[in-house]
Image (cartoon, rainbow, N blue to C red; front, side):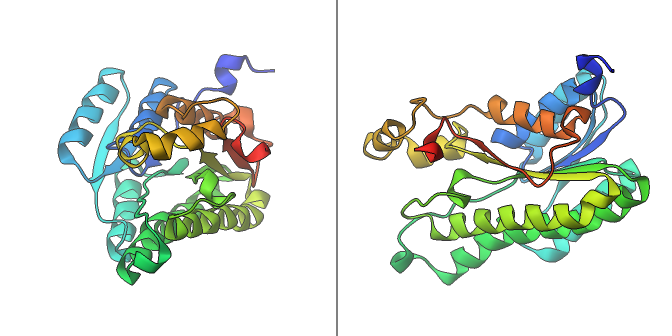
Length: 256
């Protein structure tokens, strides 16, 4: 049996991570690089991607920055094409980028609804479609979708976001059914509120934060590195038997 270091190692692997310029995506990129992977990091901020690239290359790993609007199918396809052209192959895809345009259904615009679905659901479909042929040919690969507990449980003012994440969970299982015979694992992580910039912006008000935490047995929100550590497990050989899983990482909220 390989040592636990080997079982959790990403040495020799290449990972495409969307949303790598902030929050959970940044944490995943840093953890994956620390575990030995070369990174293609997608994001909207050139400055933040440059800073992330400095951190990753300083650890001895290769880093390539790609930008593009995931709400646009053509740009999403271009992101995948650039990643494959630079790296030659993608062993691990992490669909981490996401937007949360919250509010009551009656006050929500169709534009916000469509953009949320495009970024949170359609983009992961396009990127998965692009990398799967290579993974299938090599008989190995990992796809990790960063979903949300709102894809499983109900929250007010989250109709578009929850629908996109529920769809992402369903996409995870459907992709698994097609990819598993080729020794590819496709899983989703469903976090609670995570204290990224977006999480703090949406959940800092006590009247919103306190009741939610009161319903969470663990009594707190999550940190980006906690999601990144789960992603490392799912990206590594240690999780080769885990497939089609919807991994709840939310302090016990959905168990009550």
